[in-house]
Image (cartoon, rainbow, N blue to C red; front, side, top):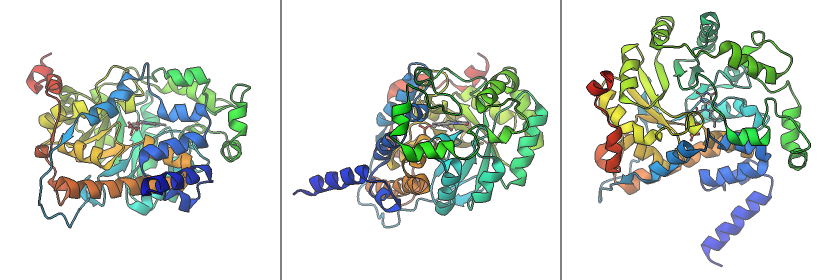
Length: 418
Ligand SMILES: Cc1cc2nc3c(=O)[nH]c(=O)nc-3n(C[C@H](O)[C@H](O)[C@H](O)COP(=O)(O)O)c2cc1C
């Protein structure tokens, strides 16, 4: 029997078996982790994680455009080192990968955010606590052994925002990620079709799917109802669903402006990274309002459909502000070579979300650890194959991208006079 056939059979067995910590080591890629996760949770939950806004054009573009970046190798370079370290946020990290903020991860598996932050700590990868997490800042911080950042929205009540920042600081978070692409939540058609609610409800429509996954079902039925634990005592209402309505009606701030970022700058001494930037114009405004960096992001295609992919938006932003600001990027990063492509186009490090949430769904903490290991191994291998001894050596000479992307590259002067 060929090695390939043997490999397929082994992986098939692993899919069929309950994936304990050992079985999960056989998952060969993040694409396979996604497929495993799909089997472990009901469709409604898989779609909540996997899906995007509107017709999902932007969601698909994130991965498709990464495929359109071409890596340019160098031959016969001494690549024994394969140094994956990256410097950002004033520190050195073993990997250029950050666990991006994801809310309500307890829907994927009972350990939710706690499983993920434990795995991040073991691998020394920064973990960004989401304001919308299903465990509180303090509960997550209690499980953390690695760097913690906190993700924030500029909600209407400055008092509430200040309270969250103070709690994050107290819990040991060293950087703030300010998400600016959610003045309100976009329609996610898959969620609407599936009747997805917070907390998830077992209905006639999904009862069969849920009953086939008793472990998942037990996880979401035990413990407090799934909701926004950071807002306990703030969001009124008897169920988490009414919390969600409360957020849209009472907290969401359609009136937020750059002046609010200036206000935030005065409240927080550490780094502030503005997440959801897609143009050089906005990156410059972020710099002027006092941000330390930007996260080039379209929220993983979960907000406005029709936005450019993140990788496509990246080069113009890096060109405009890369000398003054730290540049991060997220959206569609699935492989080690994706990480190298982002670096070549101007990002210091990348954030990931769906890959680690699928890790939680597939096998809790062990699943997330495996996801990070896959990135680690693939980055090392890609460095060796590309002919770069160090991740930090990768620059624009290592990749090319479609010429048509230049049309996005509005010059900063033009952009500001628009
Ligand atoms: C299930 C899920 C929940 C998310 N929750 C948040 C959140 O609470 N705050 C936030 O700023 N971004 C959130 N995001 C967006 C991610 O931080 C990130 O921008 C995006 O998903 C990155 O793309 P990727 O999933 O393709 O890696 C969420 C994404 C997912 C998949």
